[in-house]
Length: 298
Image (cartoon, rainbow, N blue to C red; front, top):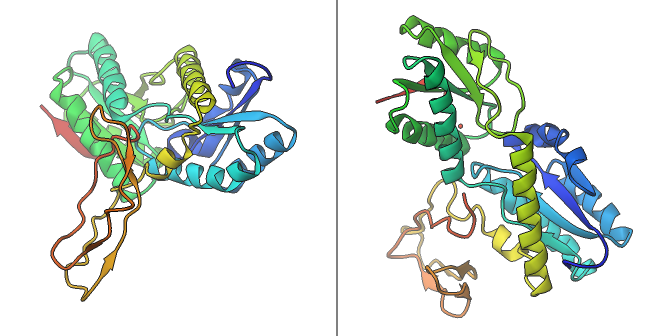
């Protein structure tokens, strides 16, 4: 897949990219690129491309806070792939939570250069309680870095961002610097100064190209990445327990990665009874994995 006909790139955006709208500015900077939301939009774009004989690499544009989108994308491709063998690949997600934390720490350092007593306001649209909670965890890690005395999260629309900014001003912060938690190029956060997008367009393009190249090479080796993508949200959300369900037993056919060992299938041994144990969230190693007015203080 690394040679021959051009590879078409499909960027898929969920709540971190305004369902694909924030990716429109990136498309012209890539060759043969398209942007869409997951679900029907993705299905239609990919179907049209492979129907015309193209080879396609799909890149989930998440910073690690939308694993459900990655899994949903994989489900769409899982349905299409058998009809177009060897021509569809799912790339690794654009980023992971460690990257998001590092990029937000960089934003905090930029804000500190303006005012060491400034507050950083991380802004994101509403999504779901789990992805929103993840953003609060990331904000705490950013605040623990100690670059700024206040790191806050605002989830919702411009009115909620304005309320969070006003609260920070009330606490004595003369400068409130707002940055997006996703791929937005601009923010509507009255009462706050815009601290710029997390990444430049050039940096986004470089990362996408890397993901596409990796996926192309993997497909050449017979791995399309789709099955790994199906597990992206494994352990995401509430843990569930069958401890009190009488005689309940079932199998969990899935692939795990154990450190440096190759991924392997547990289908033959994973049938077990739930009488004596409960599920807990699993590792998100297969895929590099927002709470209003919350403040993290050092």
